[in-house]
Image (cartoon, chains in turn yellow, brown):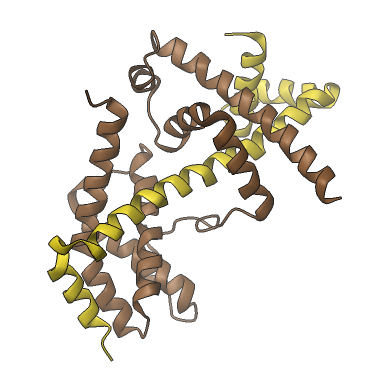
Length: 89
Length: 180
């Protein structure tokens, strides 16, 4: 792995709590001494959040496709009728 | 020839289809009895399927024996949490808590970033999604993306993570400049 990737891997281990106590301590010292590393950690944390949002949006789109088939396709008329009947007032 | 990615997607779609068809009518009946409407039921059920997927994708939970009951449990829990927070949640909370962050939407700046990231680096975003969200192993990742092996897949994953992280920083800073 390239040096920059090793650093990215270390940041990931730190953020996920996968480091041993002594590794974590050394990493915390590095964060104090290397502002650039702290900056990378901040943006990597943001990247994980964005990846989760991205993944959920993609998965929701897949679920919506399934929902559209069930609520619009002629093959699933009995499913629709069963559901619509429940909300008739 | 169908790729392994396409096969995974088709398999997932079949699972969603089966769960929707089997579990949604029971959930809709529950929502109707609680005074809710169809739109609320559909909205919450989508969240329940998302939560079910995230739980089953992670290795610490195996609910294959009663998937319908599990999705139904999550859906009822989420519905009560959102619309009837005053009702005691004790009956539904056991095993169905999906975490505080669940259901959070992207804010406008995050949405803008997501659009840029998808346009500029869709391949990396999909690779990272496969690893972090779908919990694919490095071996499966290597197979899907035709890497020479697990080490190569892991190295590529970190390269992508760095690339996206740098882009997130660049775009975030220029967006901040734009709105300041």
